[in-house]
Image (tube, rainbow, N blue to C red):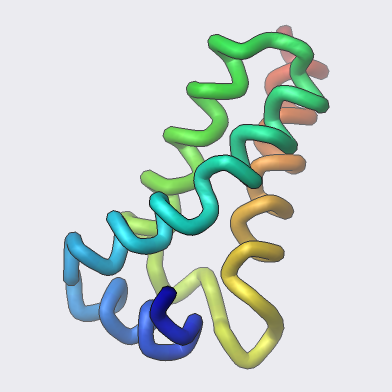
Length: 88
């Protein structure tokens, strides 16, 4: 797995392979958080997609100096899943 700072720089540069690497490494954790919160596999899949779309569209929102990418992604998943459960 790429170092988070290097991966972040690649995402900022628009490197689609960096997004693929982040997804391959962290999607199971993101999905797991989403399933636990939503208790719905379909909704958890939507949350997982939203988290990675957000990373791609706004790569500067993740700052590797503040912690691991996995923590940022699962935190986003927790937040997004909680919003969907509350609204839904």
